Length: 251
Picture (cartoon, rainbow, N blue to C red):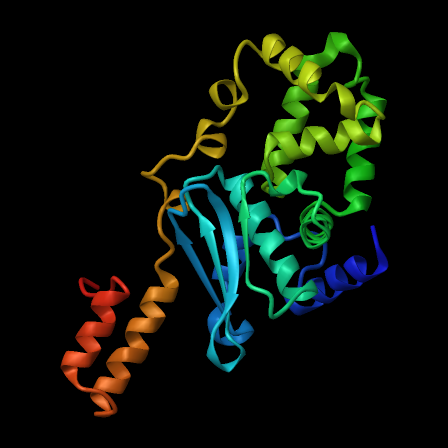
């Protein structure tokens, strides 16, 4: 990891008051008035082929949007990735697709390194790796146990099975065997990860809030529009038009 990325991660930890790792970053942000505290608008929308994007508005306002039609671990990494752009490349509006994790672009690689270290700090990865070594989890006969351990870590850090398993295998110098070992794990547990373990964690379920539009920014915008109408800064018709354009008309 380059020095500038590590410095950015440390700044982010201080900025967001993260002692170890954020876990579900969305839930952490929802604990505070992040819009006013961080000058950040966070949206969740159906972005089709995009995982997320970051842009900038007036008054140094930053806007991040995440595709809620992705598993929550994927969403969480995308959020940290966009936060990485925020700290490392502020002012550059960037869009990221599902393959960004494997991008060779310098900016994307930096944002990926940032996200990995923020969500799954190296010291914790090392600790988990040594646990796996101690309990012989990399031995072929223990693929089911390895899968169960990875699943536990995915929930702990709110990350995808793919990213956690790859991280452990990289430490064990078996990164090139990822596909083979993943298949062996699924054979050992008797099915796909999303079938055997927590399905709602690995497969988007539109009935759950983590797989729905995030209402907080719209609620905040509606309050601001209503306040402007009340103070007669804009007309009721203009306020209704703004709310209609921003899908707040039924709120």
